[in-house]
Length: 314
Image (tube, rainbow, N blue to C red):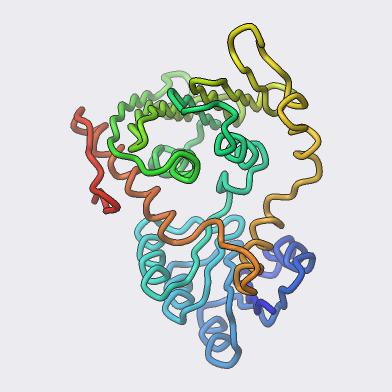
């Protein structure tokens, strides 16, 4: 039984409580709306997982990490990068999990694409093109494009294709004279240690959020574009031409009814029960942030950045 506490104002945590109620093996043991309430809860009750939802501060995050709880960042909290790095390092030291929302590891299109890549659908990976775009907003002016949009693509690439060896990045920032909106675009080239090359485009200049990947290898290609109705398309190349998702194993039907927020929490509880491996942990996020930091440095200097073997770029 995974013992769960939720931190956040009452009107902000109802959705999270509803999700946890559907996770077999999860037991809600308390909720806290302030730092003091969290301290009291951690002192008086055995808590294995703390989820943060709604407004929460870095001190509460640090308290949960210091107490040795597994940490789940739910909806709304916008902790500073430094606060998250501190919590992730504490979790890593204590052998605890730290999970962030919106990871592509539970996104059905990306999850299934990884499965078929690893089953040989594209053969030996070659050039990997990914794109993520979001609407420009005033708050983005003070945020890092690589961290806010890029970390999930960087993490998914590591999860699917292995470690990154070298990072080259370029970024353009422009303020629209008519609207005053800050528009930002970046291109990040990742050299994977296994040999593949990944091109990741990031954009804060779109009319709506969108995602795309084109994964090519010596035996075929996988294509996903969120703007199209068919989630994933597969091409074998040569005379075989392009096949739809059903020809590659019924992907469309497997995408139906998948609930990523529930699945991510279910994976964590199953991990606590020893039933399956945890899909995302603190070290994974720290490795993704190594790539983020390398991209920042490369964009600033105009030079590629080499990542140390299993190490940290910063």
